[in-house]
Every structure is written in C-alpha cells, then in structure tokens.
Image (cartoon, rainbow, N blue to C red):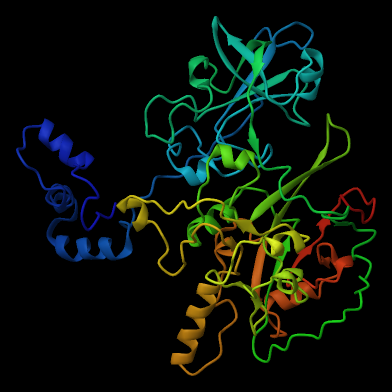
Length: 490
C-alpha cells in the first residue's frame, strides 16, 4: 500500500498498532515496512525499494492461480416447493456488498440494478410467493431460519424462482459510521454456518409496511421503443424518417462530440453512474428526497421487462443527456442558461440559471436535475474527495451530464500546446472509462475514421425518441435477439 502524505486524523496504521502491542513504544510505519522488505530484498534493497514505489507493486509476488471446478450444489432437506418451506438465498448487496462500503453515501444512493431501490435492502420474493401471501411492494415480511428471524419490506422480483426468497447482506448495522447505521435488516442474523449461500426457511406476512425509495418510476419518458432489437433474420433497423425542423443546423467546423451506447453490451452494473458521480461532484440528497423524485444522478440506467412475469426478458438502457442538435431545453430557457457550444455540447451556465425548471419540463428525455437544497456543507476529508476541475453546484440551479467537458477542455489545452489536433481516443468520458463491458464509445463524429463515427453508421444505430426531431448526439446500438423474431420495441 502506498502511504498517505499525512494522516487525515490522529490515527495509527495497522502495522503501527501491531508493533505497539508487541512492545515498540512509538513506531514509524514507514520504518516497519522498510525493515520487513530489507530482509526480502537483501543487498539490492535501495534499488528494488525505489522500483516498487514507482511501479506500485512488487514483481513476482502474485498469488498462484488455482483451478476450481464448479458443480451444482445439492439443496438441503426441506426445500421441496410442495411444503410450506422456502429456499432462502443469501446475496451481497449490489451496491454496498457485505457492508464494507455501507458508510459511502454515493453507494447508498446508487439505485440497485434490478429493483432501483436506494438507502434500503428489500426481501426479494418471487411473483408466486407474492401471490400466495398477497404481498405488495413494501409490505413487511418475516423470514425465519432455525428459530431466528428478520423482518424487512418485500419486493416482488420478476423471474425469481417460485419458492425462493433472497436476503441481502450489508445492512442492519449498529456500527461502522453515521451513514451505515440503522438501515434495513441484518441478513447475517439468520445466516446458518453451513451452507453459506442458501438454507431452508419460512416466510410469513408481518404487520405494517415500509416505504421504499426507488427511482424506477422517476424521469419517465413517453414512447414505446426505448430498447430496440435486431436479429439474424433482420440485422438492421428500418431507416428513421427525420422530421423537418424550422431551426437551422449548427456549424461544427473542427470537432463535433458524440456518444454511442451498445445496449447488447450493457450489463446494468452501475459502474458508469458511480464514475459520473465522482468525476462531476454529484451531490447526495438522502432517502426522503429520493422518494420525492429529487435524486441528482446525472446518468441513470433504465430497466425494463418484457414477457411473462415468471420468466421475463430484462433490458438495461443508460440514459445521459442526449446533447441534442435541436435541443428543446435551449429553446425554452428564459435566461439563456443552457446553451449550445460550437462543438455540439449542450452546456449549463450555472450563474445564469434562476431555477424556473423550464428546461426540465421541455426535455423529453428527463435527464436534467434541479438542486432543491444546498448540500455543500462538507468536512475537510470530504472536500478532498471533490474533483477540483468541476464546480460544486449551489441551490436553485439545474445540472446534468456535460460529456465531461472538463476532460474535453484539458485535451484541447494539451493539443494546443503541441500545435496539433486532438487525437482519436484522447478524450474519454468518466462513464466510458469505467464501463467494464466497453459499452460506451465517445469521440469526434466529424472524424470519419473515429470509432464513434463508424458505430453511428451501423445498421443497429438509432436515436432515442427520434420521432421528436431533437437529433441527439447520443445514440444507441440495438440489442441482438437470438430467437429470430425480428426487430421490436420494449
């Protein structure tokens, strides 16, 4: 581990505490580490120490590869769906994992990929169980295993196995930070020693309900073809008919930035959302405000289902600002606070915005966020986490995705110093950089050889709500459908 320049608080490292317990009066963490590696490096200590600090790792110290053969686990006795028992499955929470990240507010407010719930953990039940127990989302249920039980709000999960209940780790904490405590139930309280992943149990309806803050119904769009599909039989989408516009085209002499999102690659993991939050200093508003529809996420991932509720097909669609060529928000702002840059980026001038929210009402994609309160009260360690290249917005202004304009301008500055154009791939947005599936491509669409330009020429490329004539710079690649049923909307 690389050491800090200075501790944030009056603290001791793990190595220093262990040395103190072993009898050393006032140990130095650096000297303890150097002493350990001095024996390992031998006579070449100075050179290898400097090399390790430079590289960030020590060569040839990786853990050996282990081959594992996975088999199908046998269910424990008593999990037959014919009786009253259910199979209780234990899962780490998709945002805070087993609780180690529970004190990070960004992750608490991150909508979970399938439920879109924030600041809580549900008891996931199948549609079959919900029908049998007459449950609705938010109804409290009690799950019992071997005489121990937990109570939590139910959430009906399409596609979940009929006689299965899922409990999630990471919540029900009484220590670990102000943010982590007093949220949800503790699945560890009922988890048996063996097996660790599942156990037979019982579920019954408890009295009461708990309101869950979910973002799935927020920022709804109009239309029916959000996620489109192609197949081997119909590998391209029908050509879109672009509506006639009364507004003149914008001129982009050198650069015109655009983005393509491949829906066939998107796995809905939220990595792009977390990267956007950190890069752009997106503020946390809390469970109460999220429940009112006031979340501040600049990038959302919409989730859709299609087909039978017991066995549906699921879809994910990331939706940032579309950066429209014919942007309704720019036409509607009464103070010219949202403007079109020469390179096609839809920009927000924060100190012009007077909070009418006209731009939000005009936006068909619902990607603009309004600061209802001033959340800029930070402790010193929190201030150090902010990106200094991005303004922390105040109350009463609208904000949204900017295509990471700070990165574009940094690339411009570097290219200008060297007297050249910005190179292909030199600008990466935060969401693009974080995506583990490489589903997001960004670049200059004026460059005919750029990756983003080639994708826009694909037969799978389409614009969201293209019938409105907004001409978005962000477009999508349709998903592949394997059953050869052809192109359809969802």
